[in-house]
Image (cartoon, rainbow, N blue to C red):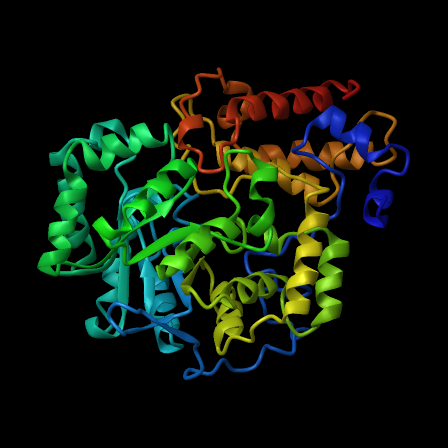
Length: 477
């Protein structure tokens, strides 16, 4: 039993804890630092981290697109978490996007070498493309690349007419006459092959996009993969037919060998990357921080990383690990705040590749993290909106936060019961409005097919609500 667990709950075993809470809970103290995980730094400015000097504007690491020969920044800007006027994220807040701040972030990233910007019609309640298009208008069009997607998840958008209308609207929102990187969004999600056929094959939309590539309105055509590996394998088996220019996959040092251990429907990134590499298809990487979970890890693991390289943030290890693979074109990161952006720029300006010894060390870290599993929510919000008004991601993230900060108990006799009870209940009400909490879930399963991580969301809602009710009534867990 590690010391972090002993500090929180000396009188109960890990086995009995997991038996009561399920695999989504473990008593650990976490490093909960905003986004970029600048350990010990407040907003990345208190000076503990020696890598806090001026960021060079001419040291970005680039990769070459083998088709076009163009240089692409190894750090790509994911435009899913755009700042809002209330200080939140466009993906989480009901407030409007702070366009002025977004313009500044995009310009700062570009001035420091970032050239790849990734958006979607589905991001930020449909506003990401518009806001990103405005921000990119301040830059010379031939000096950056824009990626967007055909995000026709809903059956109402599966017709040829609706899908093509979504495609054309992206040009209008982004204010461009060509798109550098265009993706079939989230193949393998939902009902796997059946949904893929309906979204792209039966309606002739993939054939349409191939013709758009021939016409030059799409410079590179690819797909992003989640879920059913049969769809991934099929599309690669037809590479000679479609000639995929790139493929976007989820890859990080935990998912490299252990994705299937978290959920049997997931696919280990080692396999996905290997299949792309042997075909010479460049990989674009999403979730290098596993939805932020690799910047919010148990204290003793974070301390191990800091001892190994005190100058670097916890998050930088994940970025440097994934950036060290030669077949990767760019690594996407959603950066809502300037401190996120600055810390990530330090990881890539220039990239210091991890060594083989570092890789072994991070594999050990991944194995340790599997002993303390949280609910694998990446806060993508694909499960939203809920027909009954639940804020599903915020519920899951609050539960995970309490796990990571050691504020979970197994009974009223736990020495930390009062502290943990208050932290969970008060924090829950602050994080999630009462009418959007887990007790309003009726188990309709509307959300389940949309989750890229294949979380049984209704079951998790019931489990979280049962835990809350036990705390409210002072009952045994």
